[in-house]
Image (cartoon, rainbow, N blue to C red; front, side, top):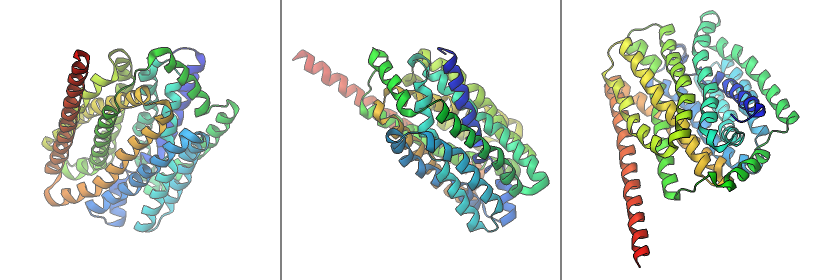
Length: 405
């Protein structure tokens, strides 16, 4: 991927991504235990997940703007060690309201990580390797989501769900301090690497895209992230209440999903470097809605396992493609800002949709609710892509008319 420093840099951020998600990824697998502890409805259980995702999404927006103007070092520190402190407080919460407050604090602390990390990762390699680098970075988060559900359920078997949050927060906090020290020692900053990215773009390797296209792709990416996040939050309860699997089995489904995603992300990164991000984005956007609708016909754990793998391939590949598109075509001074909007919209949408989906499940059951979510996502993607198609066609016709004159 260029040189030894680039390899070291990517490995460094893969590890950072892993520790960033160690605590954030245990909320969903522990949700059945939290629900039983506080005797919650599905809607209230969805509120637990939303307390984190709403604050996490809100924090992305200012974090992206700050990262473009101040730097990433402090944002990344709070995105790891700050999450650890808030996660420990979650473990000590004794009331439902207290739990929501501390989960919200965890989201605020973690909001600065992604808008700061992605531009740094992409700027550390040659433009032709951006997809692969971002795919490898996603592996860190996927590995965390793979390990954390099993570890959290195992620890909870001895110390309860609160013990899981407290125990896992310790290594996360320590790594955050190590991260901060390494950033200072190696003088790694968004500003330094942005200069490298600027020189790469100046060589003609980057091509501008119409602003309208960027907005359409931003809308589709955000919609996919929002719908998927709300659906994934209910997979453990769906597998337990709908399919009769055990608590450990429900955690295995999430681990399977992220294991498949961990493989799909770097592979799709290599493909997008060769084929380009635009065509792959459209293809994956069309598949995203049906991938969720398939949950509506799931009647056994075997079918659920197959669908989870298919969803992982589609969704994680789409994540790599979206990030590659934005860091490639968005102007340099707006990269982190646009990425902040992208993460904000997806996570905020997920936070809003999750309790709504929970209420729908309370009323009509899992199958109809999942089908409706997948169908809604398909409509958004098809309508947005149709608008883009007609916009591009009108632009081509206008250029042809101007040329003839």
